[in-house]
Image 1 (cartoon, each protein chain N blue to C red):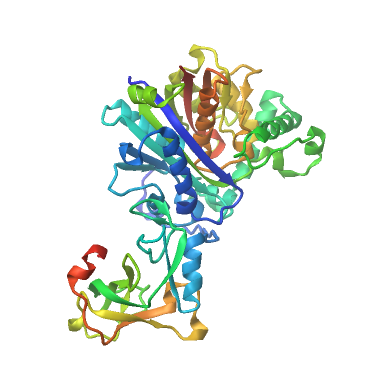
Image 2: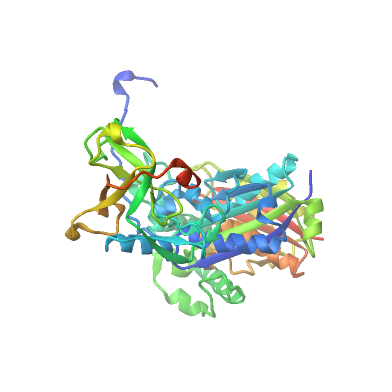
Length: 349
Length: 165
């Protein structure tokens, strides 16, 4: 295995962008490249994650290349997944020895359509989608079952929302933030019971860019190198009801393969867009009850779909690079009810 | 379980999703211009090629386009093809000619349609001009230009346009 380090990271999040994807992606690419200390043309591989369904525009990822710098022609790949999965592909590319550096970008524009309905299209199109169970409804089904099984309460969920929004105050990229009183949150009406608005993510538009490099180059470019010590992704069956929705077996397996439990963890950045999913993930990843989770505020406070998983990894990287922690777990999810999961272990030198 | 007579080959599951289009900053200028019979491109700075239509960046340098520049509705055909394949989406009578037209002042060719020209007279380097729809039909849409048509100006040589083809 080659040691691979994260060299730089940049992101943008806004409630609704008036700029198109090229216009809001390009400055984030420039920022990440500038921070990397490399020239754009010296980065050997480009990999991206996005979905055309968000904009309702075919081949949006091809158009977005205008903002990335595809001239002279570059070596490029794309996944219809969160950028975290593009990071995985880039990491594998470096493992093969074919390249020593890569830029990963992702972007999501959740504002053009009704996101909860758009996301319903990832369900079985023949027997489920035409009933239009939107994403918040499906999450509600999972939350109800989880509360029943775990003995946790709606108050526990509201406390997660309050903590996340409080922590998000220190994150300039978080959109929903502030001091919120748990009693007041609990007095709000249900959105899709047992979930209230504060249990559901604030959907945002934005872009995320990361530069990674093999050991020698990463050392040369970083004040405090941050290494990807383990990275793995797994998937559960898509049909609702095939697996126990109150657990995330794919997250558990990915965490084990990535080596989460082999040493102490200082904090975790979990892509948990719904409050109850943080609790499911804590269990699946075997994290201590008192472990600090989502100091950034997490995907609950800003969910740029297809970017928020990579944001979790990037937020963890920046925290370690700044010396606030040595070993962290970062996680990304895709699909309904934590169906697909990527777990990554980061360690500072 | 196989039973050919009982086989289901289609079910109806209507899916309709509505989206707002985010044209973006540069393309908004371009589309608004078309409403006023203007073609407004954009470039990343003085001397940089003018992108028409602009999508936000100069793809060759990956610089944001920040400066709006109006270009002419006259230009030069830099390449063309005669279309003989029918499609429900095509409003023109077949066969017809599609062109890449380098508008005067633009740095890249723009795709459109040529009319009012016999097929055997179409050529690279010929001069053409936009034929706009009537004023009451103008909208923020490339279809505000109904088509391009030949004009009586001398041809441009290939050498003069090869950098922009």
